[in-house]
Image (cartoon, rainbow, N blue to C red; front, side, top):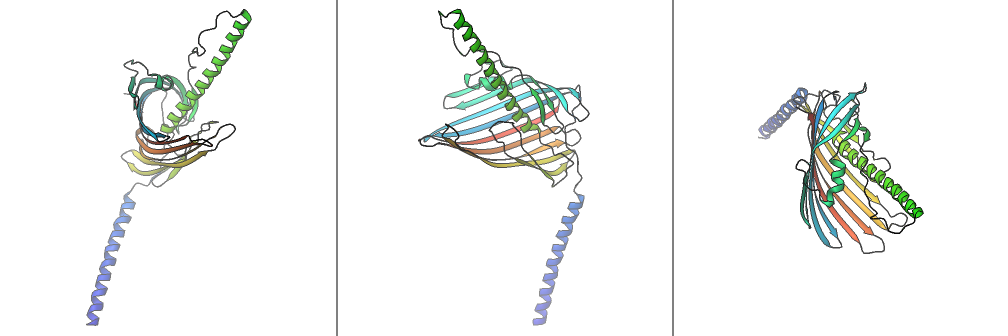
Amino acid sequence: MERSRLVRTLLVALGVVGVLTIAAGIFVVSLLRQDMSKVELSFRLEAGKSYAFHCEESSEVTDITQGKEEKNAATVTLDYTFEVQEVDGEGNAVINVTCDRMQMEHSGPDGESSYDSSARTEVAPGVSSQVATLAQGFSMTLSPKGRVLALEVPEPEASDIFGEEPEGLSEELAAQLEQFREEMGSDLRAQQQKMMTMTLRMLLEGALAIYAEGPVGPADSWRRQIDLGDARLQMPVETFEFKRHKKGLAVITVRSEGRAQFSPTGASRTETESAGSAEGTIEVDKATGHICREVVQGEMSVSSKTRGGRSEVLAAVVEKRTVTLLPKE
């Protein structure tokens, strides 16, 4: 009796081992059949050709200020044409960028507004700065890895922010006032141009600087952080991973998570904390570097408190971005 029980136990054990061996064999075969080759992913833009850049960003913001909640939603859609003027020996491309169409939709406590550059609709006051920055032409030098090496945006138009000149001024005071207006206007335009440049760099590198510095294959990962120069805004570090090959495409995932804290300095008494995370999937043409599909979604929370006061602001942001960069037909 004991002997027959021992035989049955042995047979069951051998059966389990057999199943596990077969499963392991299938797993090894699947690994062997998977394409583990490495490729150099980068833009291979050609001089004299045009490329269509499409970017759509949507966001939902819940803002709580001293217990009062407000919700805002916005969607910005951009269609640019990249006209490649020249490409040097290192693959850096000099590009003229024109805006074919810009659409904006916004909804919030004050109602809804929209803008469409192709329909020449009126620009709402609240989005005029965004329109001035994004719905314009500019030029840039783009590296094969999607880094913006140089960026030139038009100087903002002069605007009279001081109102009408007082009457009855002497010639000397009038001349001094005119000089003051010119200097202040020049400084203001320089700051606006700097902000426009930073905004466009964030947009372009955020969408295009997705490539590793060397050849990569499945399971390889690399990191990226956008450099904004002397700006106080700290961009999170993003981690990319090559997931698999797919019919001429490289499938890549991206993830980021970060926290930042700004403590009061000087006369400021406002302390701000932020935390955010994002993840997405990108499909890149391995031969050309063209971005066939890029979808990234993220969440962010911001808390702002004033020391010695009662002011408190809490905000929760949900964002989604889709991007393509393909040759124009």
